[in-house]
Amino acid sequence: MSRRRRAGGGRAAVRRSPGLLRAVWRLSVGGWVACAATGLVITASLTAYAGYYGVSGNIATAHVDTGSWEERPERVEGVHNILVMGSDVRTGENAEYGSTEGIRPDVMIVASVDADKGAVTLMNLPRDLMTDIPPCDPAGEGFPGTPGVFDQLNHAMAYGGVECQWKTVEEITGVRLDHFAMMDFAGFKDIVDAVGGVPMCVPQAVDDPKARLRLEAGEQVLDGEQALGLARSRDSTEFGSDLGRIENQQRMMGAIARKVTSGEILSSPTAVYAFLDAVTGSLTTDDGLTVDAMADLAVTMRDVDLERVSFVTPPLADYPADTDKVVLVEEPANRLFAAIAEGEVLPEEEAEATAGGDEEESGGQAGGEDSDGAGTGEASVVDEMNAMTAAADEQADACAG
Image (cartoon, rainbow, N blue to C red; front, side, top):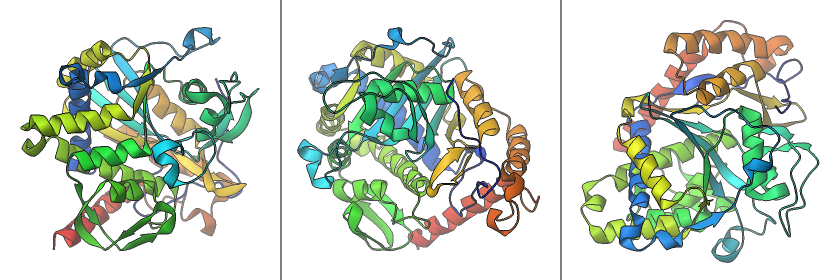
């Protein structure tokens, strides 16, 4: 397994930022989590039957040669793990969003579906996570390969394509991946436009030229360009961080899922076709994720209990050399990864005890004023989570008037 930079000592204390949940196992903040899970089920189901609508041929595929890897995590029967990525490729239709060379995933989510337990876990991995990237072979022009390097997580794709990104995520987490699915900027925008825009509460006005985004505060319907801008924007978040952007992305997933599962979309063959055409038109999967495999996954997900859906982000700390980046808080992160790999969901009381204990451990020598109370016993992470949830509810109430 890959070596991970451990938090502890110096300034590498667990960061506490209002609205950003960093050192907690599960995030359950109301209906949008269930809506996001519903959207995952509906998307898998509709895509599985895309052949009926004549759009399954839109899906691009890529071969990932996992058979050549020396060691992989063990497969757990009944658990399906998919690496879902949003790509920042800046060519073709996406060239208008910048000139960054190469391909790097802007969004990385490990979607773990446990058929036996009827549970889904969606684990966000920050693109700015500093970690060990394993040796990867060159993958054609523009992908030089690497003998192994300590670098930002999403740079793995720039070294060795999707195969290197897949391999890196497996080595970091110990979670055996079965498939990947990747969509680009234009695809996300087209999906939102295909469903007629998505309603979102914007707590405060946003002016972010980098994301090409200007929004007034309040409840509003975002078109595809605006939704993409909000999903990409860091400056629209209170602390300008990648985890703040993850929070926006999760809220966006919930809003899209609510729209997709509404009678307005599902009752209209024209709307369903437009949605499927948008999804499949910008989707790339491994060649093992066939339409038949999607149908099998859809059947598996049909009986998922929406009360057993979790968004999680592994415990993180500032990277001492650059506090705009993060590293894993190793021991609690490893326990989270092991739980996902085995399809386990920790009891809430155990999560609370673990989070509280590990925050003290990870704060270590970094106590004092820089650690913002980490390790002092002033407040548990779960208490902070409850405060964050209350703040989010207040923002929603403010939008509702």
